Each structure stands twice: as structure tokens, then as C-alpha cells.
Image 1 (cartoon, protein in one colour):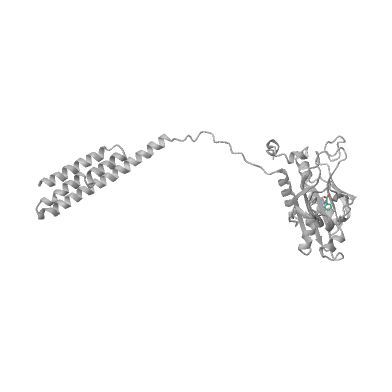
Image 2 (cartoon, protein in one colour):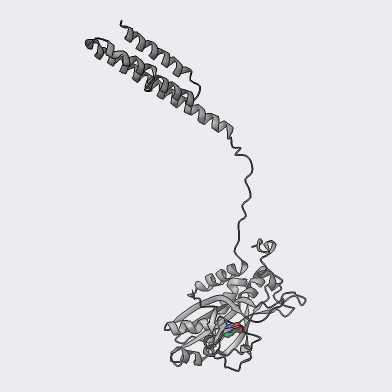
Length: 343
Ligand code: PHE
């Protein structure tokens, strides 16, 4: 056996032993360089190949390649093993205790005004009412004149309405949305218009910003008894099947005849003369309603002898307060977590 053959075997064997005992990845890499690198031991041995007779060179070359492959394979196996060890060690170091309680996630809830609007919309949606909205910044014309409130009406007083520019107001009611809807499409119309409204008013029972929902049904031969039927259904669905309604004659410029609508007290049903909610009367006023004034139809471009309709409007806060037994209107707007968390 030639000197070179021996050298290749010895160096190869030594390399395999070193690889076997390598402790970590940097050490392993150093071994690789010291054996297979340009100046590595195996490479150095091969450099002397030039000195052997030409007919022996192929055999020696093959032997060198064989050892090179052996060493490369050993390096690969060791590398995989060392990497696995490393992962194992990292996992132990960064061990996670999955039994520790997690940080508490605070789940938000819908505001009672939102849930009340949804409840009303869902209830009346079942008998064909679609939800429509209009702008909160409204023209003086649509907020007042187009719903038959004349120029000298006290509601237009600076003390009652926020004027934001010439001929422009923050709407003081959702009734202008009725007119917008009628001008935008032909009858039949069956809509609900919820939204914020504004008035210069602020105390325990009034807020400068509050919410209303308006209903409008326009078609051929819609009558006062339809109005009563719809509102009776609405009251039973919202406050319970025993709830009764009562209509009292009243005046709103955009309806004729007009009525204020009461529901029987859901707390005492009129049986407790000391009831906190109905003050012993047995009735709670919840909304205004009436048959759409013919003048509104004319302004909308309808023929008032062809159609009829009814409208109703109510304060959402009032309904929410009755549904949840909320004692003070201002709680609705303070954003107090202790209050809001209950819903
Ligand atoms: N817009 C009236 C109000 O703000 C409520 C209402 C609406 C009354 C529709 C009758 C018909 O008081």
C-alpha cells in the first residue's frame, strides 16, 4: 500500500473520530474546514498525488473521493443530531407553563340605544318595514317647512333648535326623513328611520342630542285602524303580550288627525297607585303618531286624493329606559363602564 493511500486512510479515520465527538455546530464546522477546506488535511494529502506514477493516480483519486463522501455524510448526520439537541435545549430554556391563567380580555357590549334600535327595527321589519336613514345636518326647509311647520312656529326658536348656518339646522326630529323618502320614491312606502336628533335642552329628562325612530306607511287606503294595529303589535312584541295601547288626540303639524300613544304600565298594569314608573296612572306615553297630512303628499309630488298613510315617531332613549328600568337619561351618554357593562 502506498504512502499516500495510508495518509488518506489515517486522515479520514481521524476526521471521522473528531466528527463523532464534536460538541456543537461551530466545532463541527471547524472540523469540516480543517479536513475538507482548501488547506484541509485531506486536500493536502491529495496535493501530493502529483508525485505518484500516472497509472496509480485514478485509484488514489477514487479512494480520496470515497473518503470525502464518507466524511461529508458523517458531517451531515452529526449536524442534524446537534441541531436537534439545540432545539431541545432551547425548548427547555423557554418552557411555557400553559396552566398559568391568561390575561383577562374585556369584551365590549352594544349600547342600550343600539340594541333598542335593533329590537324595534327587527320587530317592525317582520311586518314589512325597511330601515332608511337621513342626514343629521338638515335644511331648515325639510326639518320644518316641508313637514308643515310654519316659519313662526315656536319649535323654530333659537332656544329649541341648533342653527348651523343660513337655512341649515341640526335636525330636531327624524320627520324630515319621511319627506326625503317620499320625494325619492313613489308609494307604496313602508319605512323606519332611526337616528340622532338635536335640541337646545338639557336636564334629567332632556339631552341636547338624543335619538328618535320614525315610522311611515304610505299606500292606497291606509287607515287609522292600520296605525292602531301596527302600534298594538309593536307594543305587545316589545313590552309583553299583555300590553295594551291607547290613543289620545294630539297635535303634530305633519299629521291630521294626530295622537299621542300610551302603553299600559309594564310594571304594575295600573294596579299600583304608588307605581314609580307610571305614577299610578297605569299608562306611559311612548310616541306621537297620526295620519300623514295631505299637504305633505302634495309637497312630495303625490296626489293626496290617491294615497293615504300614517306616521309615528318615538324617542329611543325613553323606550330603552322602560325596557331596562334605567332611571336617568344622562346615564346613556356618560360612557360610564359600570353602567355600560350591564348590557
Ligand atoms: N316628530 C315628532 C316629535 O319629534 C314625533 C312624531 C312623528 C309625531 C311622526 C307624529 C308622527 O315629537
